[in-house]
Image (cartoon, rainbow, N blue to C red):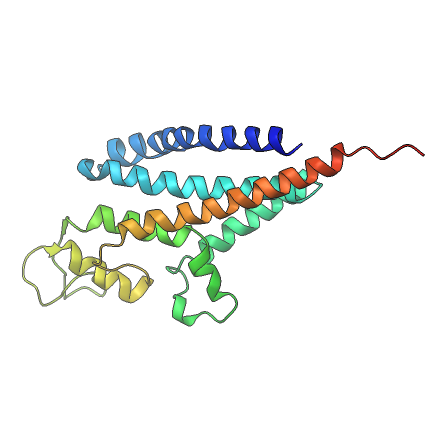
Length: 207
């Protein structure tokens, strides 16, 4: 039973990759780059970040689909983990303010890395309005700098408030960490699938 399950699982995993890029293209192409006027030359890197994140969450969904006997339980586990990833992504609650073992979620789940990479990719080369010191609104940038604010100053001041953002280029890490997470989950999914298929297909010896 190992060979058919392994072959089927490998084919599914390979076919998922182009689908993740296709979904990323439609999720970002029109809303972000046609409607919201994001930086067009950064579109390719943004697709890579988004596709890696989708692939990681898809892998997690596959694990939950075979882990439990009940599909409903698997779906609830996935939703719970997605909200966990959102809450512990570092921009709602700073990572240094979390206690163990919850702090581990900020490093394991992929949403933190994806959001950090997407914000950096979009903002680092941009310029923004000068801080209005007469206003009580929060100023993201360098208040002492004259004229428009550079993207690196804005990112560093965002990091002072929201945690994971800075002017450090971590794009490679922000892509590889979700992909590594996905790879581990794909291995776990294959193991669970083969184990359950082997048990289900075993035939007892006649007495």
